[in-house]
Length: 461
Ligand SMILES: Cc1ncc(COP(=O)(O)O)c(C=O)c1O
Image 1 (cartoon, helix red, strand yellow):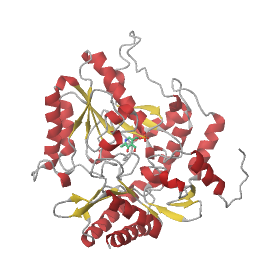
Image 2 (cartoon, helix red, strand yellow):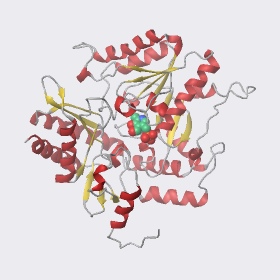
Image 3 (tube, rainbow, N blue to C red):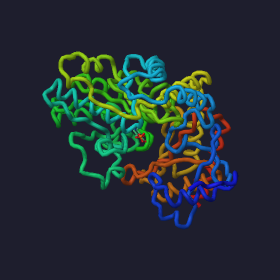
Image 4 (tube, helix red, strand yellow):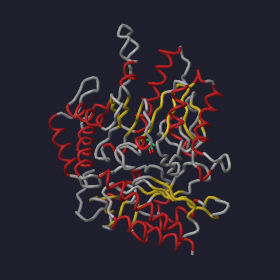
């Protein structure tokens, strides 16, 4: 239907949405009595809804995505120009933006070499799993096919990505799952599984080795980890963890896959989260912030050594990577990604992320000093979390309904959009999440902190 619309009247849009849209991660019953929210416009850190109400977005589009903020004409213009010149060709051929973004990306990732394009974080991880599986067959006679993942980490929404997901609630009722994925313990010291241990980081990494030995090292081919766990509660691995993880992967010849879908492209103050820890992965996956949501793009990036495994036996017609992603050939993705990367450089946004991230963490610590329900404050760069507890001594997690009430209060009373762990880890959907765009100023951070301060006060009383 062709709806002619008054410029300020979005009632037909709201009705079309109510009648036909199946929203993500949403129980729809409420929309029988309440209007769905429609976001009409965005500029910088702000978005406007159908009623014209302005909101400060403290979660970069809800899920850690719009890293450079809204309304970037530089990206939109570059995409428009590229689309009229050449919008698509299947990835067996090259394109100008594909080649040029890959070159700029690899510049930021010493030790890495090859970029494989697809559309989503889930798909980027599936490519990594297929690389591990194909090498298992090519090099190990089908052994070393198992892939380890960590409790509380998330790697995507497809059945196989869920098979490697440590969010038990995201996976519930979607089995049976793909075989060959095995979980290792999480590394959240605040919820230590081993009591008060002196060197928790090393202890948690050793737990990975224990799983490898239990399963048999000759059966394990890959390990996938988020550099800093996102949706599982913003978990920054403790000191000593990553060195030991790297050592274990080398010792048992295990491909280390780092899922940078959230942390990639500056979110934590470095180009990639793993770069805080001096490790060298074999595969790095990324999506959300790569083009800040201006186009769909994901990348599976590998070392040259790994890439060569698929090239060296040219006489065998089955030995190359027999994978394709139709929309991995869209040029909008790498074009937007290239302009996005240039903005990060031109505006010095990594340095801003570090400075504003430190400022935000300090302010959140201030909230912890003031509010007993703040149990733990965690994060790096503009990627922070606040775990709410019902009781500080016992660390009993705050009931999810209270956590959601805090999120709702920030939205209603202060027009600030914050997030919380959602249907992730049973009993622990109790962490408030913040990921403002990397352009955030002190004033923006103050506004977020004031909203949370007010919400914690109001919800408790
Ligand atoms: C760490 C991580 N990996 C992978 C994904 C999946 O990305 P996508 O939703 O683009 O498939 C997500 C999504 O939230 C994520 O947080």
